[in-house]
Image (cartoon, rainbow, N blue to C red; front, side, top):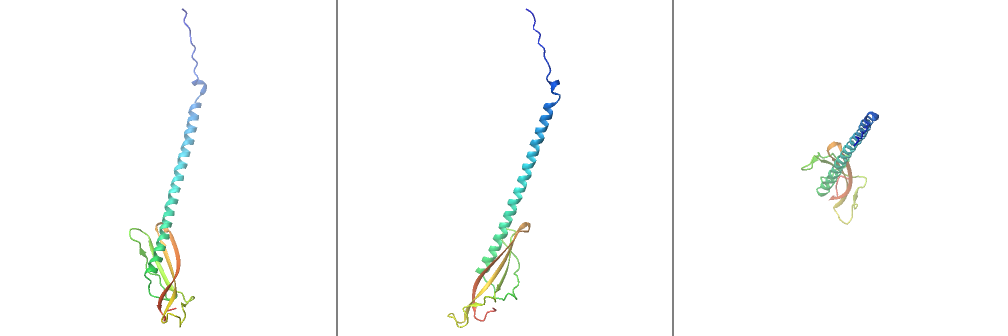
Length: 154
């Protein structure tokens, strides 16, 4: 039997590092995609947090309106009205501040001699400013009527 000789040629010498270059390029592309995805998710997380703080400020302003309507302060004219000190909502960092004033533009209803005699309904404007963390602020204005003596400030 005769021995068969096999000739082995080296393909590594003909590639001259092409696999390494392609591998490094693909690794670089995957790294750029991963960093981009992380930055996008970080921005989206901040946007969601800001939206939550904005909603908290909105709800704080609404709370101020509800508190004022449920427990109206003394009737004062718009010129005499001063904002009440800010109230912190329990278990949060959120606050609201109320400014309530009787509106002389709308006067009182009904006029003198009306059917309810010595009482009148005074048009009152309530301005509530809600504040939350990160500088979120929401201002709500609500009007309602307060029944009081006919000799009210408006």
